[in-house]
Image (cartoon, helix red, strand yellow):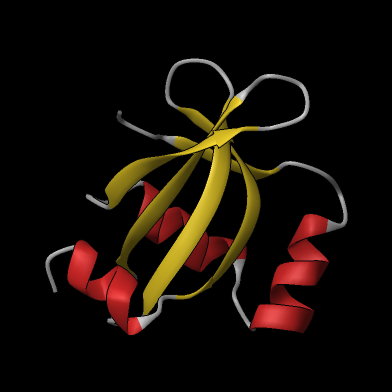
Length: 93
């Protein structure tokens, strides 16, 4: 899955990412538009498939990003946070 367009799933997501997890949308874009390790994370309440992506930013920070695909190459970001040790290992650290 190639992702070129990254945007918050709702207006409050961007603020939540910054306040709660200290993650910017620019960092999320770096992970998703790079070569992250992707996995399916189940369906949301609307029946849309959720995905988890683990990857590195340009600065070397490991992030785990959850998103819903919105058309070819587009991702609506649900949340993002620092990756755990297990997630990094899964991604082939």
